Structures are given as C-alpha cells and as structure tokens.
Length: 288
Image 1 (cartoon, helix red, strand yellow):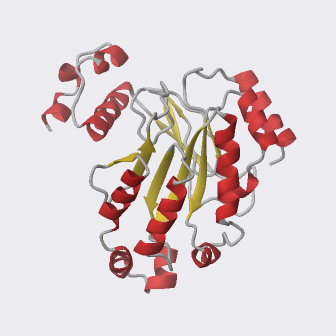
Image 2 (cartoon, rainbow, N blue to C red):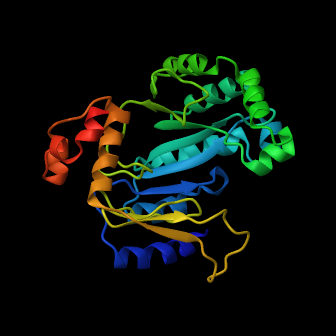
C-alpha cells in the first residue's frame, strides 16, 4: 500500500471508532515494504507497535517459501527505519521447522536478528497442514514431527543461550519444539493497558483487519476467519464467522490467561474487571 492508500483506509476508520489512547495499535509490515513516509502516516494515527514476519535469514530456505526477495540487508534497513522513529515497539517473527532449515542456521538467524535490537522476537513452530503433509511427507504427520526433531534437536536451550547473550529474556522458561510460540523480549518491555491477543488478559474490544486477524466486542461477539484466504477478493464470499460471547466466557478466558501468564490468580484483578468474586462465579475452574 502507498501512503495515500493507507491514509484512505485509516481516516474513515478513525472517524467512526474511538480507540483507547493507552491500548496497543499494531500494524504488520513485510520488511520489503517499510518506508519512512508510511511510518509517518501510522504515527499520525497513534500506532505504537509494528510487527514483521522475517522467518529466516537463510537464502535457500526463503526461496523455497517464495520469499527469495528478502535479504538480511532489507530486514536490517527496515528495523533501523522503525526503531529510528522512536515511536514504535517492534516485534519480529521467526519460524522454526521450515524445510531446509535446521538448528545451526536457525540459531545463526536468531543471533543476527537479536543483534539488530528489536523489542521482541516471536518464534512460531511450523504448523503442517494436510496439503503440506501430502506434498512433503506422504500425508504422515509423525514423519513431519520426526524430521523437525532430527533437524533441530535441542534447539530450545540453545536459543535461550543466544537470547541471554544479547540481554533478552524469554517465555516459556524452558523452550521446546512443542510450544505454541516462544516470546523473546528485552527490557524495557513496552507496556500497553490493552493488547491484541487471541486470549486477551482482560474483557477488551478489538478492531483488527487482515486475512487472519480477529475482531471482537467484549462479552458480545468474536469474528473468526471462515476457511482459507481466497486468492482474490469477492464481496459475496463468506470470509468471517461471528460467534456470540457471554460475560461468563470472558471470565473463564481471563482466568485461563492469568494462569498461563502468571501461574496464579490475582484476587484483586478479577473483581476489578468484573465486579464479582471469582470464587463465587467459577469455582470449578479454580478447583481445577
């Protein structure tokens, strides 16, 4: 998108909706498309966080994933532009499990990326879809898991050591290929009162745009993508599915997020958000 197109998207959006000034406002870039004039538009609308998918610095791996245009220099320039503005927290995504990649090249990518000092790196394991398994592993998910384990070995503890070398901390405490993701952060970590998350830690409404983004109205409705993104946009296609939410669902979600993030429940936060005693509302979740 050019800056004028970005302006054309954001101006009517911000004229119709109000957004919390202390909440997270994230824009996702391809490193190849980052430019100072686009960042200026985002600044005018109060965006405070940028995320980029980098996946790997290994050229043959990138070419195999149709990202042959991406180079280390492209990423380094994009990170420099973003951090140089002094207005954005920056997250960069990597993937573990890509074909042709392995422990050594992944750790080299992580080392080079952390040297560029993004605020956070999120590492996602490759999720093998049925077509992917059919194409590369004769439809056998076990063969895929065994192949990833063979190529990456004890990559988790070694990744933690790389993070420590650059002054980053990480979650979960013991990194494993079976995790949903690895969060590698450095201090001072950006603080937002409200964040975009599949399981947000509070009953918050979120407006999100993009093929895999999920919008939600707290306690009322969550929108999720219906099927895979279409090759071309058609206004009559059923892209989103709305699911009704309840206040009780929001309470359960909050308890789950507290346990995932903190390992314990705060007796003060629940009544502050919901005006109820958590022991009276969901005793079965607390007992579990």
